Image (tube, rainbow, N blue to C red; front, side):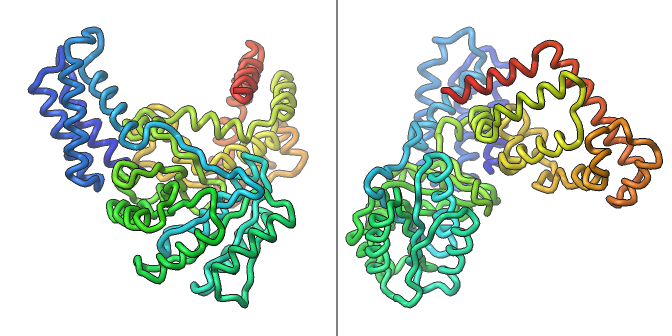
Length: 446
Protein backbone atom coordinates (compact mmCIF):
# COMPACT_ATOMS: atom_id res chain seq x y z
CA UNK A 1 0.00 0.00 0.00
CA UNK A 2 1.35 3.43 -1.06
CA UNK A 3 4.81 1.96 -1.74
CA UNK A 4 5.30 3.89 -4.98
CA UNK A 5 3.98 7.12 -3.49
CA UNK A 6 6.25 6.77 -0.46
CA UNK A 7 9.27 6.17 -2.67
CA UNK A 8 8.49 9.15 -4.89
CA UNK A 9 7.93 11.48 -1.94
CA UNK A 10 11.22 10.40 -0.41
CA UNK A 11 12.85 11.28 -3.73
CA UNK A 12 11.26 14.73 -3.63
CA UNK A 13 12.73 15.40 -0.18
CA UNK A 14 16.19 14.24 -1.25
CA UNK A 15 16.47 17.44 -3.29
CA UNK A 16 16.81 19.26 0.04
CA UNK A 17 19.56 17.05 1.43
CA UNK A 18 22.66 19.08 2.08
CA UNK A 19 20.82 22.38 1.69
CA UNK A 20 21.41 24.88 4.47
CA UNK A 21 17.92 26.35 4.34
CA UNK A 22 14.73 26.45 2.33
CA UNK A 23 14.79 28.78 -0.65
CA UNK A 24 12.29 29.61 -3.37
CA UNK A 25 14.33 27.50 -5.80
CA UNK A 26 14.67 24.28 -3.74
CA UNK A 27 11.07 24.60 -2.50
CA UNK A 28 9.85 24.83 -6.12
CA UNK A 29 11.92 21.76 -7.07
CA UNK A 30 10.53 19.69 -4.20
CA UNK A 31 6.96 20.88 -4.80
CA UNK A 32 7.18 19.83 -8.44
CA UNK A 33 8.25 16.31 -7.44
CA UNK A 34 5.55 16.06 -4.76
CA UNK A 35 2.89 17.02 -7.33
CA UNK A 36 4.23 14.41 -9.77
CA UNK A 37 4.13 11.80 -7.00
CA UNK A 38 0.49 12.59 -6.21
CA UNK A 39 -0.61 12.49 -9.85
CA UNK A 40 1.20 9.15 -10.25
CA UNK A 41 -0.79 7.92 -7.24
CA UNK A 42 -3.98 8.68 -9.20
CA UNK A 43 -4.77 11.94 -7.45
CA UNK A 44 -6.74 14.35 -9.61
CA UNK A 45 -4.37 16.98 -11.03
CA UNK A 46 -6.48 19.90 -9.79
CA UNK A 47 -6.43 18.52 -6.25
CA UNK A 48 -2.68 17.80 -6.47
CA UNK A 49 -2.09 21.38 -7.64
CA UNK A 50 -4.14 22.91 -4.81
CA UNK A 51 -2.44 20.63 -2.29
CA UNK A 52 1.08 21.53 -3.40
CA UNK A 53 0.23 25.22 -3.59
CA UNK A 54 -0.66 25.07 0.13
CA UNK A 55 2.63 23.30 0.86
CA UNK A 56 4.52 25.94 -1.10
CA UNK A 57 2.87 28.81 0.79
CA UNK A 58 3.54 27.14 4.14
CA UNK A 59 7.16 26.36 3.24
CA UNK A 60 7.84 29.92 2.06
CA UNK A 61 6.32 31.27 5.25
CA UNK A 62 8.34 28.95 7.48
CA UNK A 63 11.74 29.06 5.78
CA UNK A 64 13.20 31.71 8.09
CA UNK A 65 11.39 30.77 11.28
CA UNK A 66 12.97 27.44 12.22
CA UNK A 67 16.68 27.75 11.56
CA UNK A 68 17.48 24.78 13.84
CA UNK A 69 15.41 22.39 11.71
CA UNK A 70 16.94 20.86 8.59
CA UNK A 71 15.16 21.87 5.36
CA UNK A 72 14.24 18.29 4.48
CA UNK A 73 12.75 17.65 7.92
CA UNK A 74 10.78 20.89 7.78
CA UNK A 75 9.36 20.01 4.37
CA UNK A 76 8.36 16.53 5.57
CA UNK A 77 6.54 18.10 8.53
CA UNK A 78 4.69 20.54 6.25
CA UNK A 79 3.69 17.79 3.81
CA UNK A 80 2.53 15.54 6.65
CA UNK A 81 0.34 18.25 8.14
CA UNK A 82 -1.27 18.94 4.75
CA UNK A 83 -1.78 15.21 4.09
CA UNK A 84 -3.56 14.89 7.43
CA UNK A 85 -5.84 17.81 6.57
CA UNK A 86 -6.49 16.42 3.08
CA UNK A 87 -7.60 13.08 4.51
CA UNK A 88 -9.93 14.56 7.11
CA UNK A 89 -7.83 15.74 10.02
CA UNK A 90 -8.89 13.20 12.64
CA UNK A 91 -10.51 9.80 13.02
CA UNK A 92 -14.32 9.75 12.90
CA UNK A 93 -16.19 6.96 14.62
CA UNK A 94 -19.56 5.51 13.66
CA UNK A 95 -22.85 6.07 15.44
CA UNK A 96 -24.35 2.76 16.55
CA UNK A 97 -26.39 4.12 19.45
CA UNK A 98 -30.04 3.15 19.59
CA UNK A 99 -32.24 0.18 20.42
CA UNK A 100 -30.95 -1.13 18.14
CA UNK A 101 -28.46 0.98 16.18
CA UNK A 102 -28.80 0.43 12.42
CA UNK A 103 -25.97 0.47 9.86
CA UNK A 104 -26.81 0.41 6.14
CA UNK A 105 -24.01 -0.83 3.85
CA UNK A 106 -24.04 0.24 0.18
CA UNK A 107 -21.70 0.07 -2.80
CA UNK A 108 -21.03 -1.40 -6.23
CA UNK A 109 -20.85 -5.13 -6.83
CA UNK A 110 -17.38 -6.48 -6.14
CA UNK A 111 -16.39 -3.65 -3.80
CA UNK A 112 -16.34 -5.95 -0.78
CA UNK A 113 -19.64 -4.96 0.87
CA UNK A 114 -20.57 -8.40 2.14
CA UNK A 115 -17.13 -9.13 3.58
CA UNK A 116 -17.02 -5.67 5.16
CA UNK A 117 -20.43 -6.25 6.77
CA UNK A 118 -19.05 -9.34 8.49
CA UNK A 119 -15.84 -7.54 9.44
CA UNK A 120 -17.85 -4.71 11.00
CA UNK A 121 -19.97 -7.21 12.93
CA UNK A 122 -16.81 -8.84 14.32
CA UNK A 123 -15.29 -5.43 15.11
CA UNK A 124 -18.37 -4.32 17.07
CA UNK A 125 -18.66 -7.69 18.79
CA UNK A 126 -15.03 -7.86 19.94
CA UNK A 127 -14.02 -4.21 20.35
CA UNK A 128 -17.31 -2.71 21.52
CA UNK A 129 -18.76 -5.83 23.20
CA UNK A 130 -22.01 -5.40 21.26
CA UNK A 131 -24.49 -7.99 20.04
CA UNK A 132 -24.75 -7.53 16.23
CA UNK A 133 -27.24 -8.96 13.75
CA UNK A 134 -26.29 -9.33 10.08
CA UNK A 135 -29.07 -8.88 7.53
CA UNK A 136 -28.99 -10.34 4.01
CA UNK A 137 -30.73 -7.90 1.65
CA UNK A 138 -28.95 -8.83 -1.59
CA UNK A 139 -31.72 -10.81 -3.27
CA UNK A 140 -30.20 -10.65 -6.77
CA UNK A 141 -26.62 -11.93 -6.76
CA UNK A 142 -26.37 -15.72 -6.85
CA UNK A 143 -25.02 -17.12 -3.57
CA UNK A 144 -24.98 -13.67 -1.89
CA UNK A 145 -27.11 -14.90 1.01
CA UNK A 146 -25.01 -18.05 1.28
CA UNK A 147 -21.81 -16.00 1.39
CA UNK A 148 -23.08 -13.82 4.23
CA UNK A 149 -24.38 -16.91 6.05
CA UNK A 150 -20.96 -18.60 5.90
CA UNK A 151 -19.21 -15.43 7.09
CA UNK A 152 -21.72 -14.95 9.93
CA UNK A 153 -21.23 -18.54 11.11
CA UNK A 154 -17.43 -18.15 11.04
CA UNK A 155 -17.60 -15.27 13.55
CA UNK A 156 -20.56 -16.68 15.51
CA UNK A 157 -22.89 -13.77 14.69
CA UNK A 158 -26.61 -14.39 13.96
CA UNK A 159 -27.98 -13.59 10.51
CA UNK A 160 -31.48 -12.55 9.48
CA UNK A 161 -32.56 -13.70 6.01
CA UNK A 162 -35.74 -14.37 4.07
CA UNK A 163 -34.60 -16.58 1.21
CA UNK A 164 -38.00 -16.66 -0.47
CA UNK A 165 -38.53 -12.90 -0.38
CA UNK A 166 -37.55 -10.60 -3.26
CA UNK A 167 -38.24 -7.36 -1.40
CA UNK A 168 -35.10 -5.89 0.20
CA UNK A 169 -37.16 -3.15 1.84
CA UNK A 170 -39.47 -5.54 3.71
CA UNK A 171 -36.52 -7.80 4.67
CA UNK A 172 -34.71 -4.82 6.20
CA UNK A 173 -37.84 -3.64 8.04
CA UNK A 174 -38.56 -7.12 9.39
CA UNK A 175 -34.93 -7.50 10.47
CA UNK A 176 -35.09 -4.37 12.61
CA UNK A 177 -38.30 -5.63 14.28
CA UNK A 178 -36.61 -8.99 14.87
CA UNK A 179 -33.60 -7.21 16.41
CA UNK A 180 -35.82 -5.26 18.81
CA UNK A 181 -37.66 -8.42 19.87
CA UNK A 182 -34.46 -10.40 20.47
CA UNK A 183 -32.29 -7.77 22.13
CA UNK A 184 -29.67 -7.09 19.45
CA UNK A 185 -27.55 -3.95 19.91
CA UNK A 186 -26.88 -3.21 16.26
CA UNK A 187 -28.28 -4.27 12.88
CA UNK A 188 -25.91 -4.37 9.87
CA UNK A 189 -27.79 -4.44 6.56
CA UNK A 190 -25.86 -5.80 3.56
CA UNK A 191 -27.48 -4.55 0.35
CA UNK A 192 -27.17 -5.50 -3.30
CA UNK A 193 -24.64 -3.89 -5.61
CA UNK A 194 -24.52 -3.44 -9.35
CA UNK A 195 -21.68 -3.46 -11.84
CA UNK A 196 -22.42 0.22 -12.50
CA UNK A 197 -24.58 2.99 -11.05
CA UNK A 198 -28.16 2.80 -12.34
CA UNK A 199 -31.51 4.27 -11.42
CA UNK A 200 -32.92 0.95 -10.19
CA UNK A 201 -30.05 0.56 -7.76
CA UNK A 202 -30.33 4.11 -6.46
CA UNK A 203 -34.09 3.88 -6.02
CA UNK A 204 -33.78 0.65 -4.05
CA UNK A 205 -31.10 1.89 -1.68
CA UNK A 206 -33.06 5.13 -1.15
CA UNK A 207 -36.18 3.12 -0.28
CA UNK A 208 -34.32 0.89 2.17
CA UNK A 209 -32.77 3.92 3.87
CA UNK A 210 -36.15 5.63 4.13
CA UNK A 211 -37.77 2.50 5.58
CA UNK A 212 -35.28 1.71 8.33
CA UNK A 213 -33.84 5.21 9.06
CA UNK A 214 -30.28 4.01 9.79
CA UNK A 215 -27.93 5.67 12.27
CA UNK A 216 -25.16 5.20 9.73
CA UNK A 217 -25.10 4.70 5.98
CA UNK A 218 -21.66 3.56 4.86
CA UNK A 219 -20.48 3.50 1.27
CA UNK A 220 -17.93 0.77 0.47
CA UNK A 221 -15.44 1.38 -2.34
CA UNK A 222 -12.65 -0.73 -3.81
CA UNK A 223 -9.50 1.38 -3.38
CA UNK A 224 -7.82 -0.47 -6.25
CA UNK A 225 -10.06 1.41 -8.68
CA UNK A 226 -8.25 4.62 -7.76
CA UNK A 227 -9.81 7.88 -8.88
CA UNK A 228 -12.83 5.98 -10.26
CA UNK A 229 -13.58 5.05 -6.66
CA UNK A 230 -13.72 8.73 -5.74
CA UNK A 231 -16.02 9.52 -8.67
CA UNK A 232 -18.36 6.66 -7.74
CA UNK A 233 -18.36 7.77 -4.11
CA UNK A 234 -19.42 11.26 -5.17
CA UNK A 235 -22.23 9.95 -7.41
CA UNK A 236 -23.63 7.81 -4.57
CA UNK A 237 -23.39 10.62 -2.05
CA UNK A 238 -25.34 12.95 -4.34
CA UNK A 239 -28.22 10.46 -4.22
CA UNK A 240 -28.27 8.91 -0.73
CA UNK A 241 -26.20 11.37 1.35
CA UNK A 242 -24.29 8.68 3.24
CA UNK A 243 -22.36 9.26 6.47
CA UNK A 244 -18.96 7.82 5.68
CA UNK A 245 -16.73 5.83 3.35
CA UNK A 246 -15.09 2.42 3.76
CA UNK A 247 -12.00 1.72 1.64
CA UNK A 248 -11.41 -1.97 0.95
CA UNK A 249 -8.49 -3.90 -0.59
CA UNK A 250 -5.84 -1.49 0.65
CA UNK A 251 -3.43 -4.44 0.65
CA UNK A 252 -3.71 -4.74 -3.13
CA UNK A 253 -1.83 -2.94 -5.88
CA UNK A 254 -3.37 0.40 -5.04
CA UNK A 255 -1.82 3.75 -5.83
CA UNK A 256 -3.59 5.48 -2.96
CA UNK A 257 -5.46 8.25 -4.76
CA UNK A 258 -8.83 7.26 -3.30
CA UNK A 259 -7.63 7.35 0.30
CA UNK A 260 -5.99 10.71 -0.24
CA UNK A 261 -8.81 12.57 -1.96
CA UNK A 262 -12.20 11.02 -1.15
CA UNK A 263 -12.74 13.32 1.86
CA UNK A 264 -11.73 16.38 -0.17
CA UNK A 265 -13.95 15.46 -3.13
CA UNK A 266 -17.05 14.07 -1.41
CA UNK A 267 -16.94 15.91 1.89
CA UNK A 268 -17.55 12.70 3.85
CA UNK A 269 -14.96 11.07 6.10
CA UNK A 270 -13.27 7.71 5.57
CA UNK A 271 -14.38 5.73 8.63
CA UNK A 272 -12.79 2.34 8.04
CA UNK A 273 -10.08 0.76 5.91
CA UNK A 274 -9.96 -2.93 5.13
CA UNK A 275 -7.13 -5.19 4.00
CA UNK A 276 -7.39 -8.78 2.81
CA UNK A 277 -10.14 -11.33 3.18
CA UNK A 278 -9.51 -12.21 6.83
CA UNK A 279 -12.35 -10.93 8.97
CA UNK A 280 -10.10 -9.35 11.61
CA UNK A 281 -8.44 -7.03 9.09
CA UNK A 282 -10.62 -3.97 9.64
CA UNK A 283 -9.17 -0.75 11.06
CA UNK A 284 -10.60 2.60 12.03
CA UNK A 285 -9.14 5.18 9.64
CA UNK A 286 -6.71 7.60 11.29
CA UNK A 287 -5.53 10.35 8.90
CA UNK A 288 -2.45 11.14 11.00
CA UNK A 289 -1.30 7.51 11.12
CA UNK A 290 -1.93 7.07 7.40
CA UNK A 291 0.09 10.20 6.63
CA UNK A 292 2.98 8.84 8.70
CA UNK A 293 2.90 5.56 6.77
CA UNK A 294 2.78 7.36 3.43
CA UNK A 295 5.88 9.32 4.43
CA UNK A 296 7.72 6.15 5.46
CA UNK A 297 7.51 6.85 9.20
CA UNK A 298 5.66 3.66 10.07
CA UNK A 299 2.64 3.49 12.39
CA UNK A 300 3.90 2.36 15.74
CA UNK A 301 0.67 3.37 17.55
CA UNK A 302 -1.44 0.96 15.47
CA UNK A 303 1.23 -1.71 15.91
CA UNK A 304 1.09 -1.41 19.70
CA UNK A 305 -2.73 -1.41 19.65
CA UNK A 306 -2.74 -4.65 17.66
CA UNK A 307 -0.27 -6.18 20.11
CA UNK A 308 -2.40 -5.09 23.07
CA UNK A 309 -5.45 -6.80 21.53
CA UNK A 310 -3.57 -10.10 21.77
CA UNK A 311 -1.92 -9.35 25.12
CA UNK A 312 -2.75 -11.83 27.87
CA UNK A 313 -1.46 -10.67 31.25
CA UNK A 314 -1.71 -14.12 32.84
CA UNK A 315 0.21 -15.65 29.94
CA UNK A 316 2.97 -13.03 30.24
CA UNK A 317 3.36 -13.77 33.96
CA UNK A 318 3.54 -17.51 33.23
CA UNK A 319 6.18 -17.00 30.54
CA UNK A 320 8.12 -14.61 32.75
CA UNK A 321 8.52 -17.27 35.40
CA UNK A 322 9.64 -19.87 32.85
CA UNK A 323 12.12 -17.48 31.23
CA UNK A 324 13.68 -16.57 34.58
CA UNK A 325 14.24 -20.29 35.19
CA UNK A 326 15.52 -20.72 31.62
CA UNK A 327 12.62 -23.14 30.96
CA UNK A 328 11.12 -21.47 27.87
CA UNK A 329 10.28 -24.37 25.53
CA UNK A 330 8.97 -25.07 22.03
CA UNK A 331 5.34 -25.11 23.18
CA UNK A 332 5.81 -21.58 24.51
CA UNK A 333 7.40 -20.59 21.22
CA UNK A 334 4.41 -21.95 19.30
CA UNK A 335 1.96 -20.00 21.47
CA UNK A 336 3.90 -16.77 20.88
CA UNK A 337 3.91 -17.34 17.11
CA UNK A 338 0.14 -17.89 17.23
CA UNK A 339 -0.33 -14.53 18.98
CA UNK A 340 1.81 -12.74 16.39
CA UNK A 341 -0.18 -14.29 13.55
CA UNK A 342 -3.44 -13.09 15.13
CA UNK A 343 -2.18 -9.53 14.85
CA UNK A 344 -2.64 -9.63 11.06
CA UNK A 345 -0.66 -9.56 7.83
CA UNK A 346 3.04 -9.95 8.68
CA UNK A 347 4.45 -7.61 6.06
CA UNK A 348 1.83 -5.02 6.94
CA UNK A 349 2.79 -5.31 10.61
CA UNK A 350 6.48 -4.89 9.84
CA UNK A 351 5.73 -1.81 7.75
CA UNK A 352 4.14 -0.23 10.83
CA UNK A 353 7.56 -0.19 12.51
CA UNK A 354 9.49 2.98 11.60
CA UNK A 355 12.20 2.27 9.03
CA UNK A 356 11.04 -1.29 8.27
CA UNK A 357 9.15 -0.46 5.06
CA UNK A 358 12.43 0.01 3.16
CA UNK A 359 13.81 -3.30 4.42
CA UNK A 360 10.68 -5.30 3.58
CA UNK A 361 9.87 -3.64 0.25
CA UNK A 362 11.36 -6.44 -1.89
CA UNK A 363 10.82 -9.28 0.56
CA UNK A 364 8.14 -11.90 0.00
CA UNK A 365 6.63 -12.07 3.49
CA UNK A 366 3.27 -13.78 3.86
CA UNK A 367 1.14 -15.54 6.43
CA UNK A 368 3.04 -18.80 5.77
CA UNK A 369 6.31 -17.31 7.03
CA UNK A 370 6.11 -19.44 10.20
CA UNK A 371 5.16 -22.65 8.39
CA UNK A 372 8.74 -23.96 8.26
CA UNK A 373 9.30 -23.46 11.99
CA UNK A 374 5.90 -24.93 12.87
CA UNK A 375 6.57 -28.03 10.76
CA UNK A 376 9.83 -28.62 12.64
CA UNK A 377 8.24 -28.24 16.08
CA UNK A 378 5.19 -30.36 15.19
CA UNK A 379 7.58 -33.15 14.14
CA UNK A 380 8.88 -33.34 17.73
CA UNK A 381 7.45 -35.56 20.43
CA UNK A 382 5.60 -33.90 23.36
CA UNK A 383 8.61 -34.64 25.57
CA UNK A 384 10.99 -32.93 23.12
CA UNK A 385 8.82 -29.84 22.93
CA UNK A 386 8.78 -29.61 26.73
CA UNK A 387 12.53 -30.27 27.09
CA UNK A 388 14.66 -28.88 24.22
CA UNK A 389 17.82 -30.29 25.85
CA UNK A 390 16.68 -33.82 24.83
CA UNK A 391 17.42 -33.11 21.17
CA UNK A 392 20.44 -35.22 20.32
CA UNK A 393 21.61 -36.11 16.79
CA UNK A 394 19.36 -39.14 16.36
CA UNK A 395 16.28 -37.20 17.45
CA UNK A 396 17.19 -34.35 15.09
CA UNK A 397 17.47 -36.80 12.19
CA UNK A 398 14.04 -38.19 12.98
CA UNK A 399 12.58 -34.66 13.14
CA UNK A 400 14.21 -33.75 9.81
CA UNK A 401 12.65 -36.79 8.18
CA UNK A 402 9.27 -36.05 9.74
CA UNK A 403 9.05 -32.48 8.45
CA UNK A 404 10.85 -33.03 5.16
CA UNK A 405 13.72 -30.69 6.02
CA UNK A 406 17.47 -30.99 5.81
CA UNK A 407 19.32 -31.81 9.05
CA UNK A 408 21.24 -28.55 8.58
CA UNK A 409 17.96 -26.58 8.81
CA UNK A 410 17.03 -28.42 12.02
CA UNK A 411 20.41 -27.66 13.58
CA UNK A 412 20.20 -24.01 12.52
CA UNK A 413 16.72 -23.56 14.00
CA UNK A 414 17.63 -25.22 17.30
CA UNK A 415 20.80 -23.11 17.53
CA UNK A 416 18.77 -19.93 16.96
CA UNK A 417 16.18 -21.07 19.50
CA UNK A 418 18.92 -21.69 22.10
CA UNK A 419 20.42 -18.25 21.46
CA UNK A 420 17.02 -16.60 21.81
CA UNK A 421 16.32 -18.57 24.98
CA UNK A 422 19.62 -17.48 26.55
CA UNK A 423 19.07 -13.86 25.56
CA UNK A 424 15.57 -13.85 27.07
CA UNK A 425 16.95 -15.41 30.26
CA UNK A 426 19.62 -12.71 30.51
CA UNK A 427 17.04 -10.03 29.81
CA UNK A 428 14.80 -11.35 32.62
CA UNK A 429 17.63 -10.90 35.13
CA UNK A 430 17.60 -7.19 34.33
CA UNK A 431 13.83 -7.03 34.86
CA UNK A 432 13.34 -6.41 31.15
CA UNK A 433 10.31 -8.67 30.92
CA UNK A 434 8.67 -6.96 33.90
CA UNK A 435 9.27 -3.54 32.36
CA UNK A 436 7.76 -4.68 29.09
CA UNK A 437 4.73 -6.13 30.87
CA UNK A 438 4.25 -2.92 32.86
CA UNK A 439 4.38 -0.86 29.67
CA UNK A 440 1.78 -3.07 28.03
CA UNK A 441 -0.50 -2.84 31.06
CA UNK A 442 -0.16 0.93 31.12
CA UNK A 443 -0.91 1.16 27.42
CA UNK A 444 -4.09 -0.82 27.87
CA UNK A 445 -5.43 1.44 30.60
CA UNK A 446 -5.08 4.41 28.31
